[in-house]
Image 1: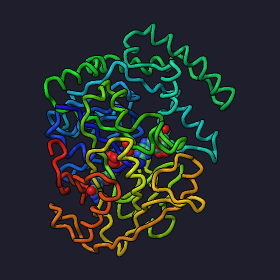
Image 2 (image 1 turned 120 degrees about the horizontal axis):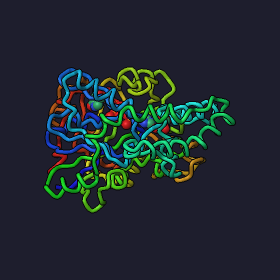
Image 3 (image 1 turned 45 degrees about the horizontal axis):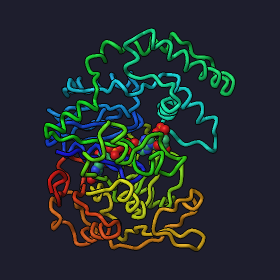
Image 4 (image 1 turned 180 degrees about the horizontal axis):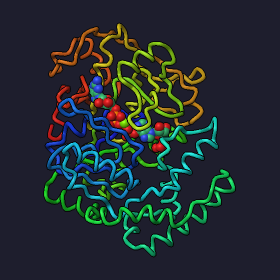
Length: 429
Ligand code: GDP
Ligand code: IMO
Ligand code: MG
């Protein structure tokens, strides 16, 4: 069985967690391959709500082996807090496997993330303040601390010392903060070593063997296409590769083993943090949509910025991820609108763009070109087949398919595990 990659098509919070959970019982491994506890996935199972940050959503399904792969940045304190909270609710987390090559988020990087955002003022990114960016920067700069380092205290100490030599200069001289002691960082990391040890493995090898044995491996992206550091709305992005190709480097799975890419597309658009957003609504319609969709961040509680669906972004996501199937989520949140605008192109200084403008300034100036679709003014949460949807809701989905040029295989009509319409089986069809 080939590997499957599941990605977000927009700026995150599309409902990736729910989609992973939906596939849960049919997969053997769920792999988180990028990001860290900047992610926030809300999954509703049997009326119970779970908020996951660092752990892959598949951890809620008995029998699935959750994997934190090499491309992830791990805050060990958060890891064990999340594991304890799930265990306390009766979820078996004993199968979790963590890559020995994953990078750790030492406490100084949380401090640097937060103070550098304050320092940037107007130019801030609006990060989650979890130390994600500085930790990926350290990885590229070859001064990162990895999972395997905490099993050798003298190596750990050397690495922390080397990193702090630079970090303390920055903290003290630029940000006017106190220096961080080597001992406090080393002790903070070492306290988790014995609990972590049995979970650690060569996850690339593990997954390769699983694929050889015909097991189903689902790689679940954190964040989303437009937050990808290479293909997103740079610099208003996260610091990892959140597109499908990120699964190759982030989990050590070669491209030749991936043949299905599922993209999650919310029926409208949201964004947390700063950066351009052509269809953003600043009026009471936006407030209504935010309230209906409960669009407040799972990680930081910030109100999410909201706007209409943008199929230029959908087209782009289809292209850069090689999407085979789209899952459109939260269609039910559009139940009460008489007319639903969908952005099909942009206008920038009088010029029409049908594709994402490559130039950052153009995207900042992009004005949406809308097509108006009729609403359906009906409650669709009880629909379980495409034919049961009101005609205008069917038309909305067909319009998306035609505009994006890819099929919509699943439609979300509510937050619960069962509140979906499956048109094509995501694994076999
Ligand atoms: P993720 O980060 O992509 O996993 O998404 P989040 O969990 O941050 O945000 C998605 C939210 O939408 C969660 O609260 C889900 O429970 C909810 N959700 C997912 N699919 C649907 C759907 O089809 N309808 C409704 N009403 N809510 C949904
Ligand atoms: P999930 O997986 C939405 C955003 C932050 C900020 C930018 C950089 O739940 O979809 P970072 O802390 O990563 O350096 O912040 O990225 N961001 C997300 N927005 N959903 C997420 O994850 C996000 N993870 C990061 O708000 O704008
Ligand atoms: Mg989220």
